[in-house]
Image 1 (cartoon, one colour):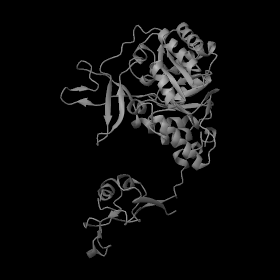
Image 2: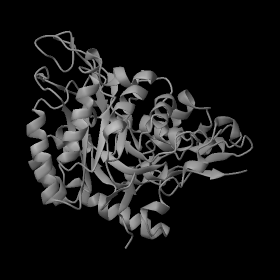
Image 3: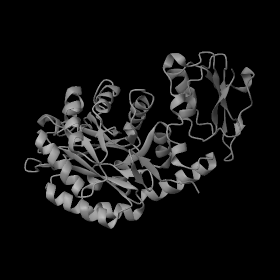
Image 4: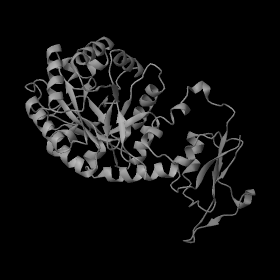
Length: 415
């Protein structure tokens, strides 16, 4: 079997599956249950120097759903830990003593230099394997000059990272905000300041939706709401792009921990292929519980065996060379759509999709026009099998996306 252990910034973890700093890592008991299920590491929910001003709201989550009703993401108004630094660090210390071989990273955030330094020293004394500086919260904390207010200010990133590195003896990660024009800019600032690793991304500043009866955005807090942070499967494409952007940036010379929409082992593999040494999970664990990591273990291990990868080091970054600027793509390469007649069920979803949203390359022939005879399904219902006009097909893939039958519509190379 493949070896799933991983080393990031000098920290060895039994596997790359970590829980992100969020509600699932709020207490020692939670983290202990996570380790018992098989998570390799946790990033403790962000600890403040003083929790007196941290007051969480009710309600605090808003749902983002697909047209079919599936939960695609969660928009949250939750702040960092509202528990005291002493309580958090006491539980962290007990957890690390009980699980010495699992990774425990302390996420921290505060304001003045002295408080940053004290937080670092206390977290290290408690046994944290590393520190993650929260420069990324897009709501609640940024209004106080913390969170993404720091992550959007290159000077602040450099200054605070420097304060921490003056006293830290364990690896230091900076957690980046995606609420910025170019993710490479804050990453370079953090690297130049001496950071040991980067975590990305945190949530996207957003509004989940609007209640059409109460006329207020979700989640509603006494008749009103505010922007929150969007997490879950819906942000995965943004996370992968930003991760890959750093992985191919020659100025970003530190390891990366990937976050954003990870739901299963396939997502983990994708993040690792684009440069992540570890993969942090939040929303999927909130929805499915800590037990989802069991399938991640099995799925990633089986895939690595199938691909011939013996260690995670052989996986990390393997797809990065194939992520190139648009101008370097081959303009002469061509694929066209192919519809398998024996698999077609006659739903004809591909036809209006191509006609109205593509290049009108799919036809519904009839015997009278010289096309193929009508096919007869097993239930005895006749239907027309769509045909592709390869002269008009541009290989956009749209028809294959809307087809409900796996393998019915495929894209074939023609040049």
